[in-house]
Length: 397
Image (cartoon, rainbow, N blue to C red; front, side, top):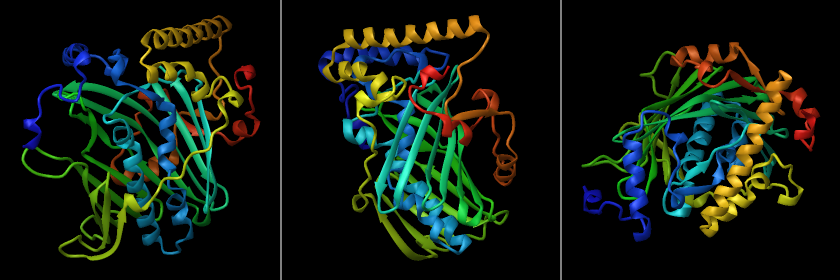
């Protein structure tokens, strides 16, 4: 119970404690989606949610590794290893860098985040697009042509308060391996925010997620954070087994997703054989390459939010408010124009579908539902659109 020794607001600077206390009271009494609330300036982040898609592939060589494995069970294990390796970047890289989790910028409809990674795996490309604003949904596609690996998916978030902030992620990801014509459905973890009362919020994951493969294997990841009395922060246990035979564990993975994990053949530390240790300290991330800001399209995240981000870094909240208002008013004007012309915003890289047989097939063994009514549809990467998508993107309307 070491956390109980910390004083309330210990992570907040003295001049910000009043606004932090007011913010905590407002979220405790709020019944709607918390993402619509205005956060205190000192907890604002400089990253748009549209940029979060890049966290899937900051280890490109691990991302493409399954494509070179001929054994289907070991291939499924490599997919599980890749998924576990990205959790640190997705859910705690910001708090590691900044000292606490920050509220991301809410992307505007049509916002784009484009880039690529270059390393020994070759070129891995990223397209991330805000495909819906009400509800807010980000879609993404990441691919490496050399190895024939493609990830695509979409994500919406619904935040609520019950003792702490809980975030339900709505959506999924699909990984495809060309060499084996193989697909993997990846479900998204539930999030809750710890450390709020001390002013040093950080992400913890809960419940379970699954990776369901067309080759007949399922991985289940159970998340368990640090409790009041025992347990370690960001802990998990994952098992890989043949579909429908959960007790026949082929591989077990145990550890802390923010630090590292151990892979065992069979039933874990007590009953299995250790075959690999993964330590984040030994795996440096590959930096994403993006165009220079002055060369980016006005719809791209870093250019669109440039002055807002500068204002946050300088603590100039007047500038932040002024520039955010400009973006918001520009978006309102676009929506008015579209309504008057009887059309909607044309997505640059993604298309809305009403159904997806592949999802239904892979979701059936794990009982996953698609909830397309909460994401404005099912969003899929559109190769034809992508081949014709060239800046200036807004001029294509």
